[in-house]
Length: 63
Image (cartoon, rainbow, N blue to C red; front, side):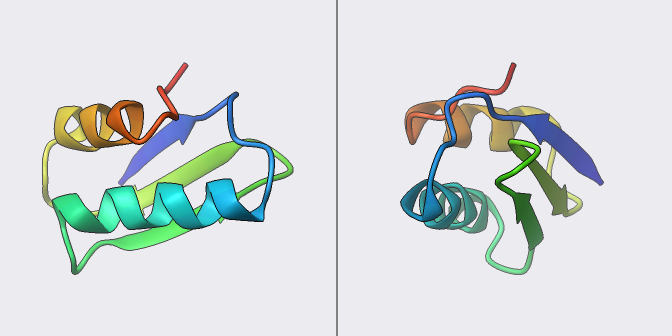
């Protein structure tokens, strides 16, 4: 499981974009996004770095 702090996330659109970015890396990933805590949790066997790069590319670089 990978946890990411995403300080640039601020709305429902952001939640959707973060979820889509993570699922582009692994369509089978279980993605949970907590907007209030500005955090995303991804359950996947893929390396953390792949998700971090996809999130940054989507405009939400992990802190």
